[in-house]
Length: 480
Picture 1 (cartoon, rainbow, N blue to C red):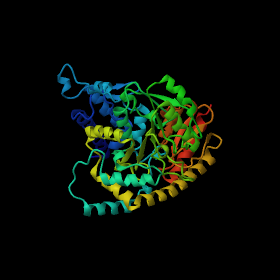
Picture 2: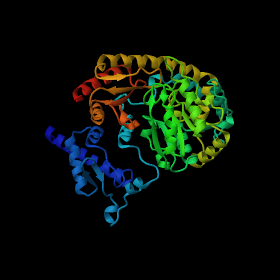
Picture 3: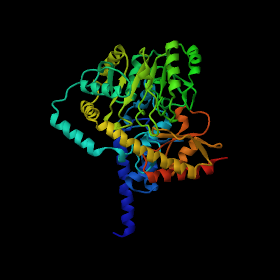
Picture 4: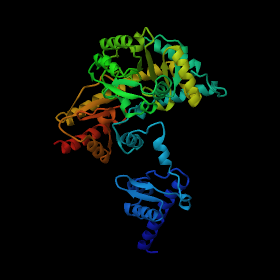
């Protein structure tokens, strides 16, 4: 067979493989009616073919009535192999749209998917680089557990007691006096927010939070029937004087705040502002959710005492986690509050998942009780300082005339304001096309100004420079 015929046969085989692949996804229900299938670019990459081969396969599937191209959406599943024989094919996408829990915003879904692409320069990820993962200590921890562990069973509703005891001792070192009975082990801080939203707040309640805030990119409260009301912030944190005004507008309210190394701005609420917030919370009878998952990631100086450390009246529900300091893979966090509240939320958690992973809870116990965790966090701070300083250096070299920023005292992020008029959605798309993933400010409720959030925690030092350099060229091309 000559080379020309062989190439033609290979192309035929490839487009048939692509068709069979897509058909199998549809037939097994993985891609339901109404779902968007992979893009032409992704299919070409997966099967290592050019786009024309992919187009041939898609045209055949369209001719068979399985998919349909829609403007601005790509190719959508319109039938499956059995529904072609019926008059009323089931569109599960209709059910998705009427579910109680709202989907993430489209751009947030795109970012979440792109964060798994190792070919991108990850300036979006809010997690530590694998270079900072303590692999040797983790292996030793798991080995130690293997020699001690017995059978696995369900833990008590509040979580593995030795872990709650270890968390209690750890929090005492942070100035927070709390007994194990007032601690609920959760699968990360996000689960704690979900439990609060369905267990403590009535539909129609309002969450008062910093604007911008990480919470605007989620629908955890809105899905439970709550609304969000933004409170302005400055370099010292939430402007507390606006809270009583908001309370008059929204009778049933709760405050959500990230006082230490705020996401996305990186600011730290001053000690004075924390005292004011507690005072207003008490006077206005508004409880507080304190999300303190970044507290240990200080670089220049330790942040002021947590609100919970000053809480004398049970006003504050306190969230902590190992996701940002150790690894998100453990899925271990904690919720601290009045015992009656913790008992109630523990019951709701048992109804939803019957407890967090027993293995993860034991690993976390070992880390907190052995001193591994405290040593690790010291090392992480040193590495974050190097990374932050490197990113600042490249920002000053490439973006000084194009943007402004405050140097964060800790945390994982730098909040950058672009000078001039730039379409942030266009900036995001062009950066992604150049292999750079970032978070545009509008997903955090920042609807004024030109903001992006960059992370210095995950990308390599070389990628930090490459990413900022590419951004500078794109911004220059967009500024009007």
